[in-house]
Each structure stands twice: as structure tokens, then as C-alpha cells.
Image: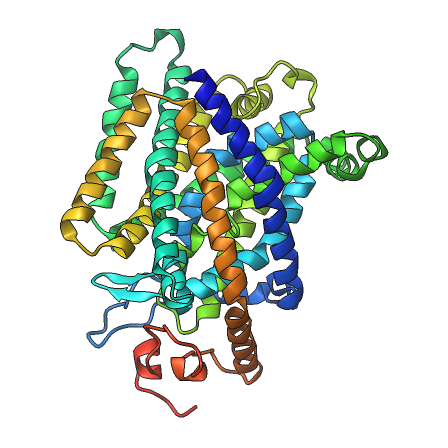
Length: 485
């Protein structure tokens, strides 16, 4: 088993290091240039569209979840234990300079996120409780390649709702056990597993709207709590903030790093951990973005780009400053990953911070479980509309959460990492081929904004593009009587 795990780990590292990350970086730069730096140019629009209400149907009910609810679903998956453990690992292996490269790839990846989520909106479908969409759907409708969509869907289902969610459950269980300490009874992980499985079941069997309601409540609470912790730690060491910022930049470009092999480690750790965290270009977030009822596909492209910034520039940066502002003297013996963050918190706040970290980890990990589940549900419904299949899927997810809290497997984690690389490559090929359509939508959106209108898209604006299932007319898109344009 150890030999198999080592082979999977090495293969996954080769795939990510030499294929996935370079393709992500090159496409991100191309999309940035091709879109006129949309991720910076339309930053005010991202905040404006975030608060749009969902258009209503003929009965006056919201057609689906709102832009903000779709944002929280994607944020629930993006913002997880990786924002604590992943940043800690990046700093432990790549030094403070890795944080700069994490920021840089979030900015470049914002353009990729814009393209994939805009396409997810354009090619979405109507379902019984709202909209469904994502890479599998734009592969089917945009590229006429259902086989490609099925491959993507199967890989995503294996990675997110099963492997990654079970490992999030394991992290919750391990953190609770560590907080209790030596007095922790042997049955504690089983109890944690039962509670997590029950909570997950209550949410996932309630459908999309319950998922949106839960994430809408949990994600802001999670962000505010963790941000408050970061502010307190930084305030205690405010005199070191200028030095930490300088350290992040100098160790990203410093002479010592540039003239040695260390620069490769710094860049790779920052880029890789950043991509694992914010998921820009990986094909996961468009599954959430496509659920939103909006009046123009570009709106959700902008909102999901804001999600990348929320994940990296806010949550990951909080972790980085929690680790770096107290100074590294007391962190030399800390374990990489979540152990580094935990040691830094205890150094700044005292031993009670272990309990605080347990609460934060629970919120982060549980929200990820919910977000990951929804990604899986969307792709199960792409493969089959069978209600029985969906019921079986939901039951298996709940079982996986319970098993993950009790058992851990490096093989599962490393296999999921490698499969996610395959998933990313499939998605990147698709968005590269369809990106011209996303940029046409962007031009239409900006033109309508220049005319002082709240942009509305209908499929007659792209008469040469086939496979658009929704967006029939202005009344159905906006939920109001069509107005003269």
C-alpha cells in the first residue's frame, strides 16, 4: 500500500507541476489580456452585481438562488481547511515569499474564473428547483461533446463530494480530539462522525434551496469570525506588519532566492497552494455559479471572480499574517500545515486558542462539505435525472462523511489530488475552445452598462451560437414584462 501511495503521489506531483499549473498560468495570462484585465477593470461591478435579487417566475417566486447565494455556495467549497493548512504548508516549504505568488495567481486566475463561470451561466439548464450548469453542461451544449462532460462529471464526483468531503470530516474529528487532549475517549471520533453525518443529511436531503440557505448563513459567519481572529493577532503584533509585508515581497524576488533553486520552490508552493484553495480554472466553481438566476451571464462571471479574491486575498492572507506577524522564532518546531497555524495562534493568544481553532475548523470544513456535495449533485443530474440515483448519491455522501471522521487514508487524498488535475485539464481545454463566446458576452455587457442599463441577455443576441437552453426572451430572463430596449 505504501508503494502504491508513493506512486500516486509522485504521479500527481508530476501532473500538477509540469502540466496543469503551467497551462493554468498561460491561459490565465491570455484570458487577462484578451479580456482587457476584466478582473481589475470591472471590480466595482463585482460588488454591484453581488447584491442583485433573483428574477422571479410567473408566480412571483425566485426562479432560483440569488447571485449572493450562488456566491456563498462556491465560497463554502473554496474556503475550507486548505485556507489554514494549505497556507501553513506553503509558508513552511516555500517561506513568506510563497504568499506573494499565491496572490499573483489569484489575480491571474480571476480571469479564468470569469470565463468558466460566464460559460456556466450561458449553457445552464432549468431543473425542478432552479438552474443547473457547469463544465459538463458547456461541454455538452457548447462543444457538443457529451462524452467529455461525462468524464468531467465522474472525476468531479469522485474528488469533491466523496474524497475531499470525507477528509474534511476527518480534519474536524482530528481537531476536536486534539483539543480534548489525552482525556479524549476512543469513541469520540465515532460521535463526531455521527453528528457530522446527521447535520450533512439534514442539509443535503433538503435540496438546493436549503443548501443555499445554510451557506448564506454559515459563510459570512465563518469569514467574520476568522477575520476577527486575524485582526486580533495582527493588532497584538502591529509593529511587525511592515516587516512582514516587506518579507513577503523580498523573499518572492530576493537575490538569494533568484540565484538558487529556492525560487522554484517559493513560486511552486505559492502557485500550487493558491490554486488548490481558490479553484480558479479548475471547473468546480461554475457548478455553483450556474445555479444563480441573473439577467446576464457575465454577472455571475464577475461574482465568481470576486469569490477567488475573497478566498485568497482575504481568508488566505489572514492565515499568512496569523503565522508571520508573531515572528518565526517559536514556529521552527511546528508541524507544517495546520500545526503551523495552530502554534502561531497559541503563541499570540494562549492555549485557549486551540478551542477557537476547533470552532473555525468546524465552520470551514463543514461549509466545504456542503459546497462539495452540491458540486457532486449537479454532476450526478448531468449524467442521469433519476430520482433514485440522486437518493443513492445523497446516502453515499452521508456515509462517506461518517467514514471520513473515523478513518483516514493518504491513498484517498493523493488519488483525489491527481484526479483533480485530470479534471482541471479537461475543463481548461473546454474553456479555451469556448472563450471567444465569453468575451463576446463581456463586450455586450460593457456596452449595455455604457448605455446606462442594467444588462439583460437573451439568446437572440448570439444568433450563431447553438446549444443555449435558457435565456429565451427578456420577460423570462428578468421576471417582468418585457420593456422596449
